[in-house]
Image (cartoon, rainbow, N blue to C red; front, side, top):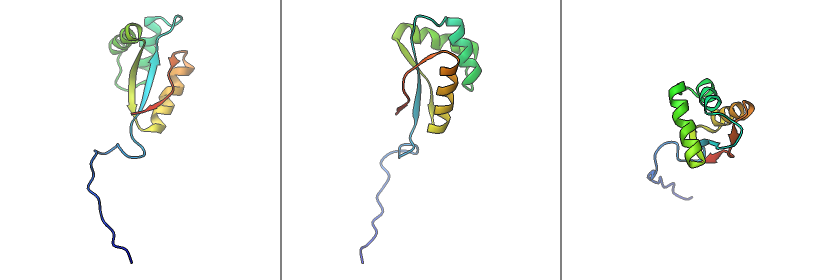
Length: 95
């Protein structure tokens, strides 16, 4: 019979199969800063309208921004809600 060898963890929690998934909003030519800010504040916990405007500015200037990261199921929900509200979304990324 073989012996079981326990390996030491080299990465922190959340780095295994589940990991963190990134919700990324991309810049487009049809959403206003106001719509982006208010939509992010409506659907992403902890995002105020002021923070939403910061994200909108980042999206506009760099082409995209990670607006949330965490568990896949929750990321999928936020991604669908933001897309349903008309934001331009990048595919979910595992990070």
